[in-house]
Image 1 (tube, rainbow, N blue to C red):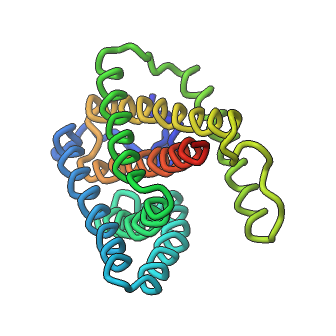
Image 2: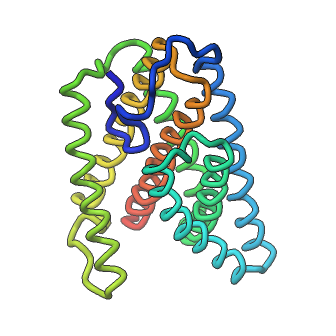
Length: 247
């Protein structure tokens, strides 16, 4: 019932307890989500501010720390109970903010105006998928989840191969990282998968609320949404950069 394509939200997350008094609510997820994304935004703006004020070395170092520690912390949270801990989720959000602040600044320096475009388009994808989900246009069935999980596994494999090649000085995977039609199509595919993952996450959260999941798991739900939104935003930056480089 609770299966989702997002690795941060899966069947083993919710333990339904009929006697739990404080239960998960949509409002609780929304409130905690607002706090979490605000922490990430403040963290990102602080790094951007360091770049603007001439402290580029410190900003770059913080961004690298956010990326490396955030990646490690992600897997730690994924395979432990920390993903439902508010301090852990907010710490992860702050680390993601450091990383996003740095990489957004680099993209903005190369393509002025790209940051606000990526931010607005990511918000549009989130809002659009929420509306589509609530209207029941995309039925989140078991087959839907299996197909989405399979596609995301393939994308994750591509990401890991790209990371390994870059770390050891190997060549890039041809075409998909370029600004040609195949590269743009790949980014659109990834964003589309991210959008569908949002629909699966919304369904997961709604079912958790309906079945009386414990309230502390609202943080787990927020963590899962955070992972998906950051993924979409990063790929949106890449897509816009590819499109602008063709001009």
